[in-house]
Length: 257
Image (cartoon, rainbow, N blue to C red):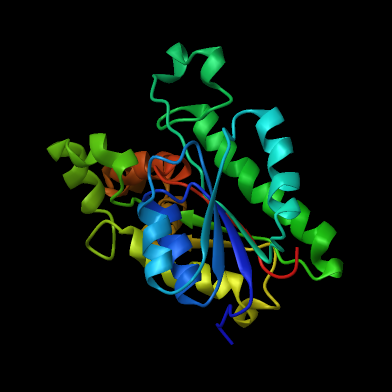
């Protein structure tokens, strides 16, 4: 049910973090993997996949360049690859106060900025739109929404003792996630095990979202007098930050593309 034997997966953002874990998970499930990278200097993921006895092919492209993206698909298909699974996991961050956020960075995203939150909302809605359009063609489209994950992109947060403590105290699982926490989710969505699942955003966050929603519901059930004396409002920053979680979001298209 979870086997990907005989299939090929294409993964963007697979050189590190969640993307790397996703690529390796797909190979562990039996798939060969096509890796899309900016350059060929980082071959760690390719080597890890080949060590599992699977094929790993690297193609280079700058995914912020429409021209390079347009040229990518023909190149992959002309080489004989038939893509069954697509994982979009390339991510980027830009940090600025909202009022000082440069217009030039709006198309790239970042933490603590409206652009980043808007981009994640867009991924969720795009997932639903594509799922509705393609389900009849046998293509399932789902997304993974990560919580706070220990990756290179979060080094600034992890290095700040106060922010690290504040965030960690609000994660029900009691720890930050690690890339390997996504292996099961990726394999599930990429395999026949999820054949009747489409248009879904799967949250992998150690219970973070569940806790925020409980706190939110508790607050809404209080009257104004109770709110004034309640400790619940201290979670308000969390309601804002969960919309700007500092990780990538994967969009998966299981067989057949």
